[in-house]
Image (tube, rainbow, N blue to C red; front, side, top):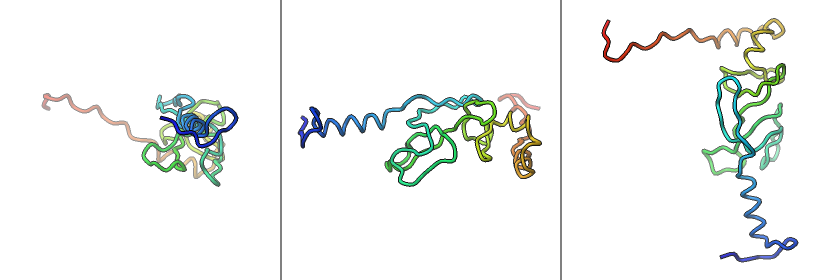
Length: 141
C-alpha cells in the first residue's frame, strides 16, 4: 500500500523517493580490469562521488558504494584508465600505481626511467619471487 504525502508534478513524493533510491542503488555497469580481469558493478564514474560532502578524487574513477556498511557516504574506488595507454585498470598493486594519475604497471615498466627514483624503488618492491608449484597431493619426494 502506498501513501502519498504530497506530489511533485503528477507523481506522489513517496514514489519519487523510491525511484530515486532505486536509481542510486542500481549499478551503471560492470567494471573490468583489463590486466587481472577483476569485475565489480560500479555506480558512479567521475571525481566527486554522490552522497559525499567534500570528497574530490584526483582522477576520474570507477566507484561503487561500500557493500560492507549501511553508510551511504562510504564508497570503494575500483579503478580508472591508465594515463598513457588508456587501459581500464584496477587499483590493485599488481595492476597499477598512482603518481599524479593512474598508470598500468606495463606502461610504468616500459617508461620506468621517466618516473622518479621513489617510484622505481616501489616497483622493485612489488616484484614477487616466482612461486614454485605446490607438490601434488599424495606424491612423496
